Image (cartoon, rainbow, N blue to C red):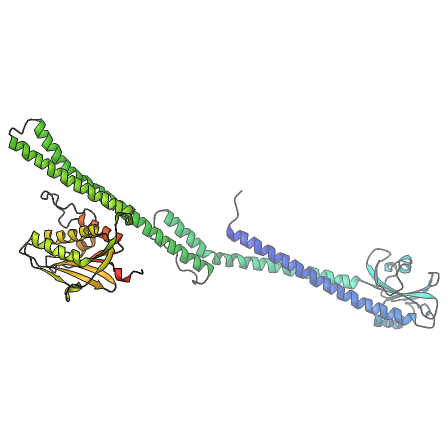
Length: 483
């Protein structure tokens, strides 16, 4: 069976509560009105009975047809249209009756005799069963007998019936009106939920850019829901975008790895094919081929080791480090000597960070061998991508509680797009696949950044076209560590 909609269920629930409330209120009002009328009638009957019971003797029986102008007003004054006098044996000794009361609609005498004489009011049925009566009896004080006063409940019953009918009609109309108003109010109130449903359907269809519109104030429940959903959708969109970017990087990585491994392997295979086919007639040709194989094998080994190191740094970077106290000034001085050895024509200066002052202390708790690998990559990058004789500055010191080592050159610099990707694996500013043997595979700067981050630091780049490049290694200073 199809389940009812939320709007219908809420409407049925509220209509049921409203119906129960109206029924309860109607019942309470009618019961209170009936109790009020009975108490008022009981008071009148007790007053009449008490007054007659204290008389010297029973009054004479009055014929209502003879003097209705006297009997009816007197009985009406006390609200008691029927009074009966019973003697000590229970026989009717007399009585008074209003002319407006039908004699056949009076309560039977046997029922009147059964009325308790202590003033307790009881309900009696008429002899013909047409209506109910209320009766009160009191023992006479000065003569032996009982006085019974009775009044019909037809008027009170009619009033209660009219009240209940009015309550039923009014409650029904009110229920219909409020139900109709509730239907439209719920429709308007649930409209944001339908918009959320449509948004979710669009997102399920693949449109991750959709967001839940701001249909209600942020402080409401639906406002909180919309905010939470929009936050979740933004995170999902970023996650999918990151996943797509990661897959794109992985495809590019696999492609680059395949190319970098294929090049030395093809060289080794080609050399062995030449030897197998007898295309190396002389010992010198064999020696040259073996040197080529050794060179390609060395290149393949270095590439494999770099890839293995990157994988290890991605999985467990801290486990690849053997930390000891050291100072970056040692690495800066060695880097200066290495640059001069690679190109004696270069002017290499050793300064403080930013080129200001002299080199300052930069104590760190780090793996010296790994940091040497970082600095070697930065120095090699400056030597490989700047013309011979280009000035290079190496700055070292402490800035804002961080140990800093800079390698700045005055070379051609890079564009913003190149600078944003220079630390990517296998990325080279020159994307040409034709390179000289032993050329960098594009892993040096990626390894440098991974090693720096494994130490809790980073490698940054400041560059612009025609203004050179400054690679900046920053590490936590050992001076700030709590012993």
